[in-house]
Image 1 (tube, rainbow, N blue to C red):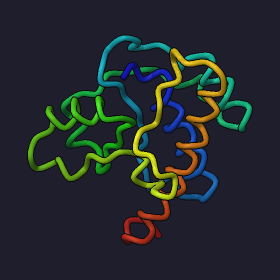
Image 2 (cartoon, rainbow, N blue to C red; image 1 turned 90 degrees about the vertical axis):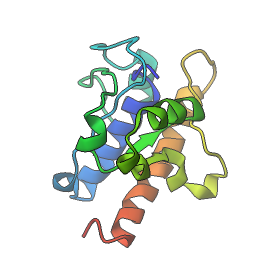
Image 3 (cartoon, one colour; image 1 turned 90 degrees about the horizontal axis):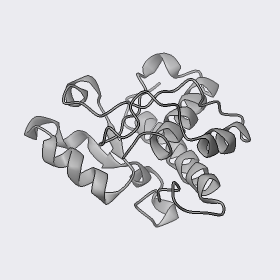
Length: 151
């Protein structure tokens, strides 16, 4: 929604995984929110800490709002939950609807579809987000390789 918790965490984790597998040159990776609550802000400090504890740096990222040109610019538009899916899908031109998927579609073994928003939660919500986006990131790269989109 605001691009300060889940999506920048996913951007950071996926970027790190792509770099580790020497695939970074094959991607343009970016995250965005469906609302303009935090445009220009760094990720939530709790997201940054949880990611840093796993060796992923997020402090250089800045929140931005999803824009119409993103439908043309990106081959895959991945959302974290149903609310964001509906917002993005409603704004999407028909010729780009095939690009929109839930990020956790790439981790079907988890048997959940939505990455929960940790912003107002307590406990280990930020670590849970990391667990989920790590699994989906691995699944996405595996899928892209199986589909011939990556070497």
